[in-house]
Length: 68
Image 1 (tube, rainbow, N blue to C red):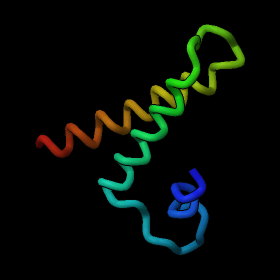
Image 2: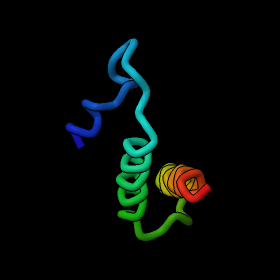
Image 3: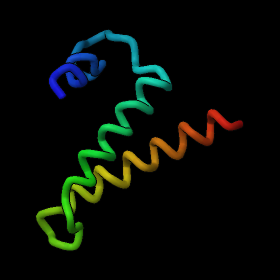
Image 4: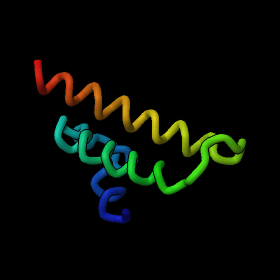
């Protein structure tokens, strides 16, 4: 996780944004992290649900872009 955070353009001003493949890879990791919670029904897990769905949306968008 530390290595993934270190390559984030959000950590360094003026750094080039992630390319498509890097963003897709990070979305995959984020999706896995979101799945570590067994239940998304409890209020304290709403953040995990948001992360999981956002990661899926990024993956779907980038995968659809690849197929086009």
